[in-house]
Image (cartoon, rainbow over all chains, first blue to last red):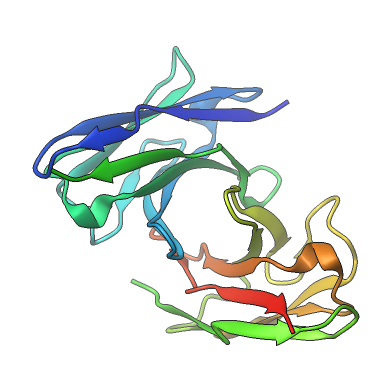
Length: 119
Length: 107
């Protein structure tokens, strides 16, 4: 069974850094497209970043240069390093997997981890 | 980046109603569009992919159509469990983007 479990969220001061983790079971992270999606309180979904099986990465303009997506193939874990955090980054962060072989977009999601940026 | 404009942002409907939600892309995306349902405090759930393909386990009252820039999600007969927020997602290029969402509420 495919499962994604995020961790690493919490309260952080403006300007600070945080690293989110997403532990995957039931599939191989390095063989799939993985993504981070966030949702600010009371707002809609916002795609943040993605990493393809070949290692190509991409970012939303709102986080480009501040966030870095990566993965540890040996641990089947996805990461999101977040630097220079601001209040606008306060959100629930979800990791999600696309099943490229089956032709499915973001089909498996974690439960989300809350990041609150506040002094 | 491709912009996705979703409408309406909210609607009120009754059980049994036919509901239609639209999504327009700022440029052509072939059929690279998906629809999601999200309930409060929960992760999104994939309903439709490739514009019109029903995800496994999703009731047949949900359907999708469209190609290019204009897409539609239809719920043929709204059920109590369908009151939720719906989002479109384009995965045409590396940078994905969501529509703004449509909240379906009780009339």
